[in-house]
Length: 328
Image (cartoon, rainbow, N blue to C red):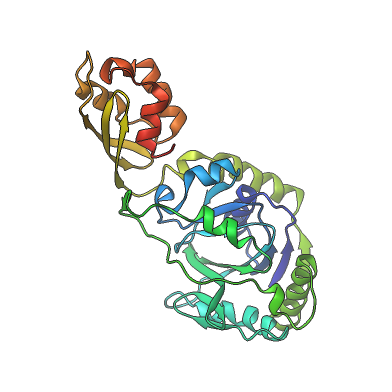
């Protein structure tokens, strides 16, 4: 097994790195890495149902879909991520095998960490790590978070969908009590020192044969994948499972209710009703909305071009787009 050092904090690049290394290297690999503020969602999740969209857009938080299943997690520079990439073994996914060296390294720092549930590491009943796995061809990816000094308030804000507005057909995250590792350590370490410690521990106990940086060729290949896939709306939002939503608001021009079904990030069904007036039949607008990306700017542009005030007299594109999206 080799250690690959990756100093990037770009979540698009880092998620692409896992796929690129899995598909292009034969070595077993261990990596420690960090992301700037981002929400990383599971492959089978509905991005719209996992997030407070208004919060993440206001705070400039990126949303990236990963290759593995499981729930949504929040990353920032206070969070340390680890990845094992190995040959696929026999049988089902094995979380205990890959969590063991991480748990032992934490115990060596005085943290009584244990594997709990199906894929979490906890201390005193509080979650400090969530892990996920997938098989890709003949290779297996296991990765996990380590909450070291993360902004837990921002985490709560980003991962806060309104359960009354969405009935998702995807996989919802399970909310757990979480805590940071930094105050629990037996010795005082900053984030960089913690990363170096975990790297040394794994090197000494997991049969590491080499430590190296990403090559120029690997960086180019990873960046190409990040640009074409991991930063693309089609992967991060368009791959979302179907879901339905309903929003109702009172305006000076009347009450308007929008009922939608969204599939693969686009409006698949739209029903608009209320006590408003208009000079054109609302069913025409419902048809025009079909296939539109479920994004505020896309919907607003369509409503502007379609002269939404003809359908809902007195309304503006921004007002109806905000209603449809469920934002203020």
